[in-house]
Image 1 (cartoon, helix red, strand yellow):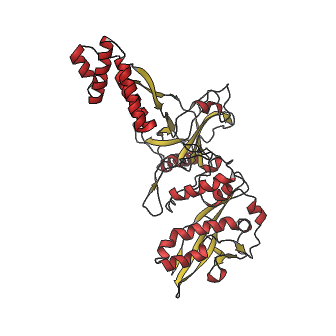
Image 2 (image 1 turned 90 degrees about the vertical axis):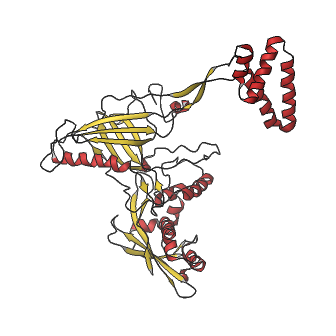
Length: 458
């Protein structure tokens, strides 16, 4: 039996600006014989459609888990054989349940596609591969890895990040679109170099880790690295733009009785039974040390708090309530929402096609992603928003954190009349986008990311 994996898109290159894409599949044959045996072939293709496939490397029981490369690979593939080998291992794992059903078969399959994937007779530029950081090598062959995270992790922390990422990430369905046009612009005559614009960059979603590289809680900053970009749209800044920074504050109460019970409970939690007993005695002594109505009021409040009816007891016996010590207390940050409305009117056939691509860009980009097994739904792509003054960040307008596109609303007849051009494209479209930031804005954000005192910042 022969089974072939899905096509892998492998990004390789010395840095994020000089990357090229390799397309590979791994074909597995087996099991054959008794005991079972397998062989694999790594195929390289010329494009994402799977054209021009040639075998560039093989593995079988005689190669003892090593890949034997041939000269059919492109020069770039020869340089990054180590990266392709890692991708091949992942491809074999993705189809292993279809071709290995018993423990003996799984062991045989692992023996040729396991961790021992070093190349022989390959002519690989080992120095070139070794000079890459572990995180960079991972980025090149696994498009699901969080390539947009910080590039300055130390080597010891990268391995941990890779392990955690492998545990939580599933491969996307084969029909998932992972690349759009590098840049879509409306109107097509927009002067990006000397006009104020808003840029929307679609990025592959990556989850935050629960513990960051320094051991702190709350996870690493995802980072909005250019290497996470799937496509871009540049539009004129629309009217009605605004932002609203909010924080959740709410009134809180804690009267004397509740404070006393809180001290007793805290003493027990921190110091055990002895602390509970000591704090109880201390609290009761303080109550007994007061005189008259103060003593009675505190005693009633503690008794009422214990029964869950602290206000009613005092109201019934004295016609008064104890001071609730009301105070406005911080309850947490709030996420910001942003909405933008755009009108599109085509003035030429090429511009009409550009409009359709832009609408498709947002609609498809915000859709959830099915996993390869259809068992899971992966998070949709996320978005980097930027106001720009020419080619620079707009200092007089707010910045954005990474956003989710929650609503893409399209009106096909904004003028109230159905009208199309000869090719069926509407004469006018009205599109409204509603975004929400993934994370709240913190005080320290204003001193990061190169934001100066002469900018509004977030």
